[in-house]
Length: 522
Ligand code: XUL
Image (cartoon, rainbow, N blue to C red; front, side, top):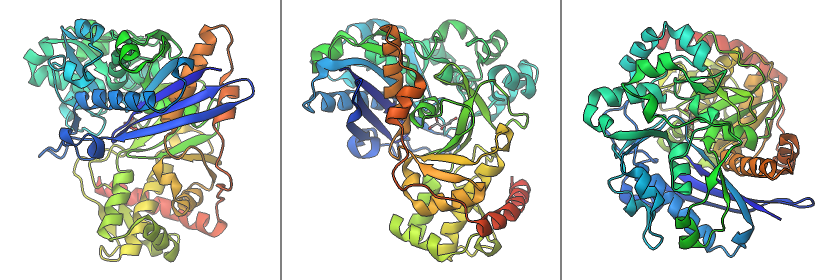
């Protein structure tokens, strides 16, 4: 009757989900979240990010993620569950963020004192105390340099799954090595957020999985190994600073003595952590090619499983490794929930009022359009932030609510054509999928049936399922992905929303106008 723990370190919060996997009973038995701004205010983050005068910069303190891990583990230990049943832990983390640790890290992590808080013991471990995260867009010149050195954008995309993107780890590492060579020199290991947190759990130096390593512009997708031309083009002596890459299903170690002594965790396995999007693929049950998921979170993403890696010729999308050993296609939009919130707040509305504004306005908004680029955008690449409006009165609150949602959905539909699938069914997830009015726009724009899956955290649920899959396989009692996800991943009852033919026709025409407006404003 084992328990499996999934952990997720996202942009704004840290979540734990515990599942129970038995022959007759498969259930989520516990959920909890720490919100960085609210629960760890001493790090002074805003939406999980450190304030900066540079609109392109986005950094977060890795010590905050470590402290959040300590807090969720403490709360879980106090929840009255029989933790002796815990068999394995796996994790999910926001992708692309890099964590730089110095030479003393290994010794420190293996000798943590169980009577002292974790974060306090990490003082001096980091060779860089603020980690650039996926929202950072300061590395344009580094992207160009790496692209040129490896023989162009098409070559980089063909081998690694993506052309160079400012938020990817490789360009970020290059910038750090160039601007702070001494601190780079003092760096023993460059982790991603996922392998850093896994290292804290095992009290050692954790590897990466191909799902997260493919978000670096450094890994050869076909083999799951570092690609020497990209590694050499990125920073001096980088190869020895990179973690190993292991298959996602690897049990990478046991939970360290620190956690056992501090909170009474049993001697349980730790499974390789992955990125939040690869974990969400599992948490939305996408273990076959065909259906896609749309996650409406801090970032909005659209993704689906791919058997063969078909890279995006337009260079906008990504191909990552999938936890199943396959691949996944993904397009990421930076202006997700924070853009919806900006419009909601400007209109002085709550979410119920936001829904009413959508109900009160017609599909197509009478031709009024908004490019929702409140922050620099990833897809399409837009450096100069600021929402752009066409035939849209900034003071017409209801029309602006509709325009932000329609803009986001049309951008998503236009920029996912490269995936090469006719999208007829969408699994919606993430906080924004709580809102049926937003989902109606999604259904109409995509001409697809939308169903809501895990709304709060599909990445964390996916991590828990990954822990179960890997642990059961290691114990020679494997359970297939299809079976495991079928039991945990179900559409919410009565959440099915179908496309409305009139609205579908409106958007089919308007999508061209939106694409033209976008092209003119980039
Ligand atoms: C994906 C991406 C974001 C982050 C944060 O490429 O940048 O989705 O993983 O969630």
